[in-house]
Image (cartoon, rainbow, N blue to C red):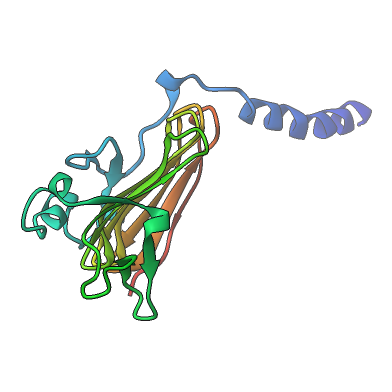
Length: 189
């Protein structure tokens, strides 16, 4: 009887220890969803996070000429009016179209955002002081669309937030080693 009680006491510890074994990458099971590459971006999403929004290439097609041919101004040269649109200081007759840049004290680029008719339109890139990409987001007429990605200072992906038609639909979070830590999906409908 005493041996039976000891075995019953040890059984949970044995079962728990079996579940704590580390698995190497070869033993990991694939996600039960279809993964695919997003054109023009270094990210992979699955069918649960598909956006109904236009892709970045189509958003940039709204510009009458290549974005590089529009003016680039410093953040300090811009003003956002009450109508929510960005204007170049001393040019109040039409909202700004071009690129707005912020810099770190050392002169390196901290933030670069493209604007079309005063609204964020196209891509926004934020960097760490090291020059490493920290955040990348896409906008369509001021609305966040598609995938917004953030990285750790080491260059490892930190977060992907998924947006469609101006609504948040989910995200994935990774730790500093690149291990997926959390995945959430907002129920649609």
